[in-house]
Image (cartoon, rainbow, N blue to C red):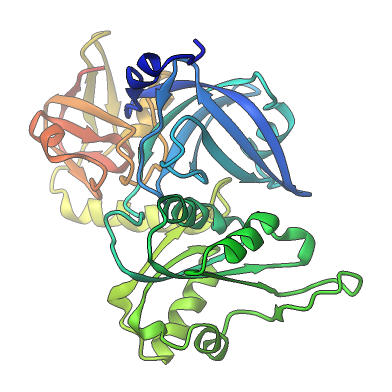
Length: 368
């Protein structure tokens, strides 16, 4: 469907949180290993979300199913297109596939939006956006959102890049700085090449640099995104400046599962805690209502993983209880859930649970 009249435009539906088929309409090579994919909804609709949120995608690659979450880089003030800016991880499974296979005309199914890290739920008139690498994507969504509205918000945008050729959105960052008196952009290169003739700041994040770039940083709200080590450095620097960390907000950007080992260790700790908390020993019977199938589940098994093991199709994205994608209705039985932030109160009252952070405490029946 092509939008040709005002009536057609006004009749467009807003994006739902269920799966949405989208079509790629443009691919932009941002840096040698970063691409921006622009999508429109296959059935025209408006992409409404909070700047900083993410979407989930589920792909089958070489017979294996993969779930990934990617932060939205576009702004909800331009709701007809959705942009995902994705860095290629040579050791990953999904990003190489996306870089190689997604072209103009390619179709995907996305689920979203989701995520607590956003600039609508966290308000401030004076902000600092601090990011590194591909962690720039939620920051671009936020700054584009503010710029499009012409808001008189005092914004410092600080971005760390490894080298000049790795600066994502380089031209747009310069344009934002040039066109908007209230947006000050500072790009810092940690390892600029000898032939790159970089005249800007150099070096890794440190307290003196933050204080020099933003002298009144203690009066601001800080949004931060990047590798885990970078975000921890930023927190340490802010602490040394006597910054109130209640005004610090961050979001881990880790497509491709680079923190897999850490997450596995955390999962094991949770399993041990669950084993301590649950008095019943298991195994328990898990019954799928729609098929009538019953399987035995150990008390240390994560419910989502067991559902997938049984070959049952179920949506999932963050796999940490934050996005709500994997919710299913529990008909009966007792469970133990580690995190259910992504489950809205009304859904919880209706009996829905998040399978990615749930263990069984008794025999359970699911509406699957």
